Image (tube, rainbow, N blue to C red; front, side, top):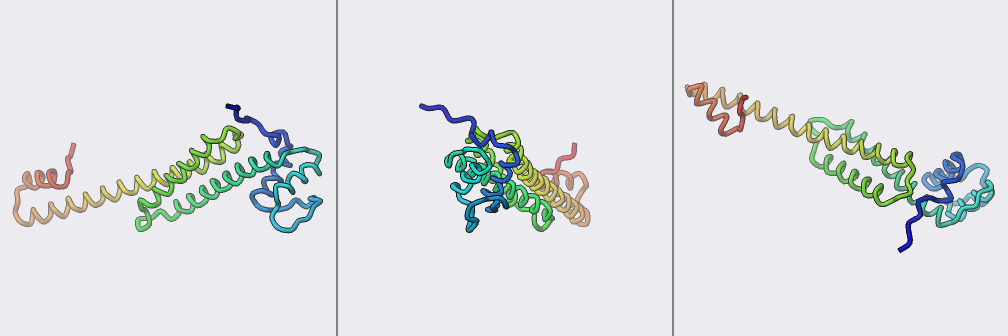
Length: 188
């Protein structure tokens, strides 16, 4: 079995050229100095031609692999933005298990993607990790909110039960036993 490549011809390109390639691949923008036809979205052939125009030879397959990675990272960044937007709306009325499930799903996809690709740079891994961190924050906030709501409900039920039983003339010790047994509230 052949070993997987751990580097690409695009790794040797100057950072400014790589940034332009990312804009071509992710944002579908042609650079101003591109010599070819600028109609439609940039194709892999256009990117290969642009690199050649700038004095660098790259293969179409290297551009394809790079494009797939960059588009995935872009989607993960977008997921991070969406996650942060969801966090802004995390109120008593909106917090739900759905938010947590979505955050966990995006996190799983990000982790799977990172583990399946050996050619990520540290910067690319950092970008995906930021999106995963944002997703984890949503899951943690959802859990915290759920616990807080449960604590409030139990406290309200405890007070209501105490008030009703006290009004009915039930002994305080018996009230505490009832609360402990039925509401699961045990004071330490």
